[in-house]
Length: 368
Image 1 (cartoon, rainbow, N blue to C red):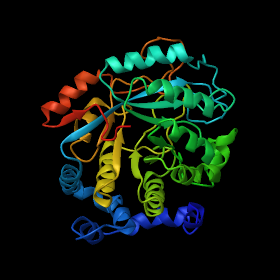
Image 2 (image 1 turned 60 degrees about the vertical axis):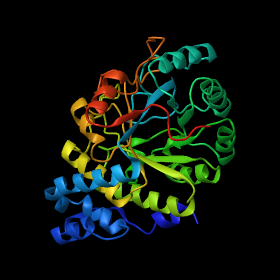
Image 3 (image 1 turned 90 degrees about the horizontal axis):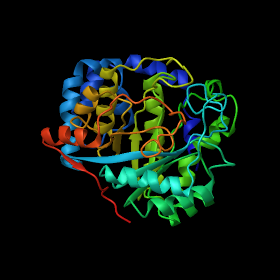
């Protein structure tokens, strides 16, 4: 059974309308429930009715996170290898129709970039590219993994959706995790944001985590781009996808990311504003719903927000990030994918973590 068969049982507008039906009693039931919460509980916790319970949600989320993950924060760095892309995505700085300087790192440039990242203290790296199959493809990724293995203990990948055999090859070369975001689960509106390119195939992208799972990866990362469509509905479908994958690939770990739209060359304005308060609600709801899922917050968010995110549920955070190819060592003219908000160095953020009584973990819990 593919996820499409589960997805097709739900209709976007019906799911969206349901959030306004939840009451304070539904929220309290989900909050204080004994045993595992289900999708209905998650929906209640991200509903408008749950906003008055935010402080209680944060307390429960923190208790669960400390019990499951301890007082640790996993640190990672994104390394952008290429900003070439053949897709037109209305919200992305890398979109094919943006007239920007393009760069794909060669082997020598990768070595320089990885060396620069390593000196910052990281041992967990996320390799990122645009989606340009003719330029950045499985052979390129495998070569990048081989080089990254010389510097880092843990390598995650965020690139275009690939075939199962491609994923198997990347796994054999030493990649630990694959991150792929659906962007939005609103099937009808999805083409509006992805008018051209392979990314316009909604169901091919939807089936990608299944191909990753069958390839045997240790971890799969999910998420949506917050600001495209109603965040509650998109988050419900993400949780639905997570539930399906956890049952089918029960030996695999999973992570959820929470990217909010940031300024970039596309000049795209969010259709939906997701406030800091609502993002806190979403993070806490995920933690209360699922004790084992890893929750990741990037430098898209402000320093003030990030200084508290790990206290109420986030377990994985980047720092000192560069979102353009060669951003750490080459200082190239290639354009970044989006502007970051938290500009602090990794060591500055690590001190914040330490001062809060937590430990910054530079090496992931998994080691090749």
